[in-house]
Length: 242
Image (cartoon, rainbow, N blue to C red; front, side, top):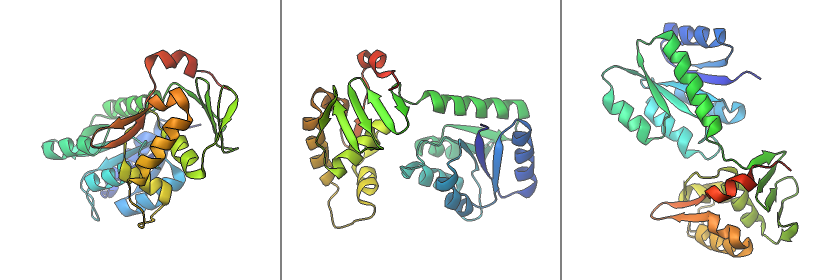
């Protein structure tokens, strides 16, 4: 299946040129001349990469990049910024907001394609070593089955509440990524402002106790939030499909 790319560029000639170059390379291209239009489509299409101009009419490319990375559903999508040669500040801010790379205008076509291919490949390799098949995640003897809403360790079911399951599934699905309490709160409670984001701490503590030694994989990142980390000694046992 061909990879899909969002191209967000307000200059029509440049937008058409980028689309032509990428289509010629076999990519499926979605063209947008405004950031808000791209953002309304990104969750439904989930492109493999976003090629994003810094200067847009409705919001800056930096702001759009931040929105992509702040959204837990789209945070894994790599973003490459298109900038002018003297936009050093934009480049620095782009990396701070989570962009993967930047390309200066005017650009060399071969370099453009090489950078895009490298970014997409790196994004795929950045996935955890554990196998994720048909909604099932296996990490050693820990198995999270989303289709059945079940968690088991050594074939014994672990009794989790729906929220505990949802949080554990989300963290293991996004292994080695760090999430703030606010991000996890929004993912779990979907806009319920009547709860404190400290509710996440309570859920984490419960999950750690229930999954035994695998609770050590749920790391607290001081001043930020939490991450499900895979230790090197677990890599060999994690890389098995079920």
